[in-house]
Image 1 (cartoon, one colour):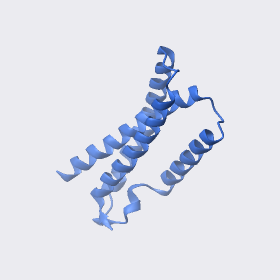
Image 2 (spheres, one colour):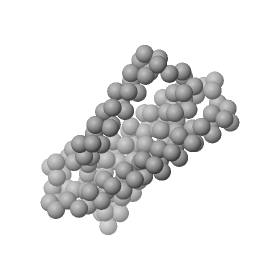
Image 3 (cartoon, helix red, strand yellow):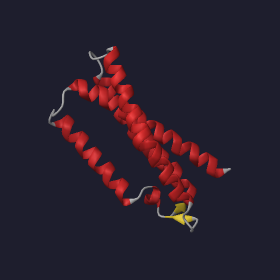
Image 4 (cartoon, helix red, strand yellow):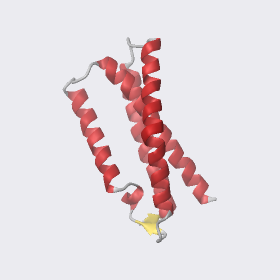
Length: 135
């Protein structure tokens, strides 16, 4: 059991690590694919995931955590079941795609760079929300 506001810190760390790892794969794969168009596509992936999914997800989970009645919570309650399932599907899908080379490296470079940046930013925002809650 941890204090409910520490769930925001835990969420921040999980998203920062996930975002960093995905971004690292994307950047490492970008070798040989760096063009203005590909960079534009990565920005487009980032904007799409950030504004349509992750910024809303951070707000949703921050509010959910803030509204817990009890101060102490089980440490896995930084997410709800639906979010854990989505994360599992994304991880399994990503590993499967890369292991079996189901998509070209150019796609991995472009998509993972945009997605990883959005995930990392979600971790930053969870961290900001944690420090705001501490005040």
